[in-house]
Length: 474
Image (cartoon, rainbow, N blue to C red; front, side, top):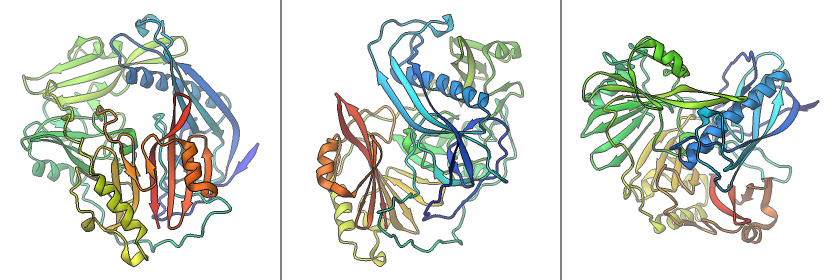
């Protein structure tokens, strides 16, 4: 039995979320109270593939299966919560391409997780804004709060603004999804202004091609416009990387257990879906509720594995013109302004005091994505790899990633001061020396002057190389 109390230095308002834990669940945030680590476990799952699935689909499928096994193991040990502390994916040679529904699998490699199984807190179960290393979806998180080692620098934090304005989020009048009423009251053909009158201020907005844009509300509602009218709406994110989505503000108005036509619910099995007799399967994983040529509802099913059995369950929906191509245009986010990276780095080096902090107005480039994060800050993305986070118009965080958007490949060979993409870890040891604090083999913290770097690595051909970093500005 090991007792663990986490004390975090925060630069943002401390928000806690009361929650009664009945059975084991994977946590997105560390508890802000006393808890005990009952056990630490490591579990591995061979990568599984079903016919027509891509490599990323195979990984996603295997991750979901493994997370279910971890939850089951935690429940058997009497744990109330699971903290995923590490994730690893190793790819191997594909042996066969067969269908999971026939209870067979192909060995493509494996995915593994390390986890802490924890007890319930004493008293009220609450959470701090400190994110766990890996969230409940199996996505590695880049935390925005700071845990200082004994030798870390002393940091003076700016005053907390308790009077910041919160965005408009009206109560929903329509709380379900249907052909007649659309998605929570949003229908095909509505303008951004009319959508805003129903749902309020969007969490993020970005263009995917000339004349087409996407607005998100929280992390689970994505509204696609073409020529300023709604074409379709989905709860499935097709555009942003997990790293970028993890920055977005939550919107709790849209439940995870959504209803369609008062008969279909998220997680419903294929057999139960057929019994509703609301539509028909148009292929092995798509069930369509038909309206007219431009307004239908497609329900996507995914194979879930439990032990030696598997079944198809409803995972996501798309309402509206389900045939429209809403992929990001290949040339949309490919621009790379090397001068922008160097200009920001030089401004940071010459920032003499908090009174001379960098604001949005001095960046000199227009963002391609605008968003809010869960702490009321503004997020601006300037290309495929660069995101800046501002609080009260002061730059507080810089994120440089291998990929902030899906489906674009590795197209920007970024440089930022002494850092660059695929930089060998050994070279960074020479750059930062004793300033390095190794949290894990693929995650280092570096305290240098008024900066704190979180460096993230990937193993390529047996060598550890830099793929992304997060920089906190003090």
